[in-house]
Length: 134
Image (cartoon, rainbow, N blue to C red; front, side):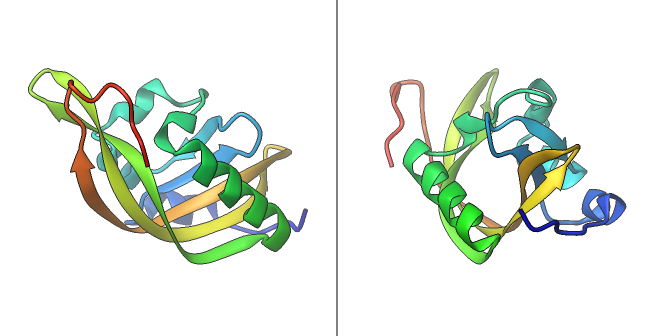
């Protein structure tokens, strides 16, 4: 794995939602304030836990395979899932994300660094939609 150098302070203060997530297990190790805001501050519940539920499984596996072979994906576009609060209930919404994805080493772990450059809401899921489809 090629070591990508990055400045954690710069990532923290970036206006773009930024995440560092393990390649195995999708464990969220880092998220900046812009990432918390993009997810209505629900990320507190996910730090140190899997964030696989923010991605469609097939797309996630494809993205990880490309990252392992290419090391970096520039202006990569994909559909993901975020949370929104509907009165008192947390619900999911589908979003289109365009961003930068890089394979990095963080705390000795193989991770992906994701910087969301543009997020566009596609649709919101109501309580009647129990299953999400791509």
